Amino acid sequence: MDGLIWAGAVVSVVGVAGLVWCIVSASRARRENLEDAAMKARLQKLVALNMGALALSAIGLMMVVIGILLG
Image: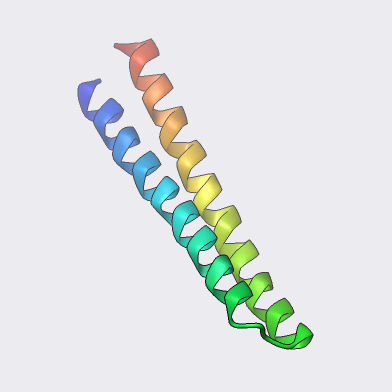
């Protein structure tokens, strides 16, 4: 079960890295002073990536918990 725990930890770290990347990208977009339509389009893409990264992180945490419970 150690493999499941470590794999889950790696998946969680990748998900958290994706969340950090979304935060950095949103702050860059904010500093660019884009028009409303361009800002809305960019943030809509970031919301989708943000939800995917959050889901990936949650799946990784589930893997860790299952590995601990089974181990």
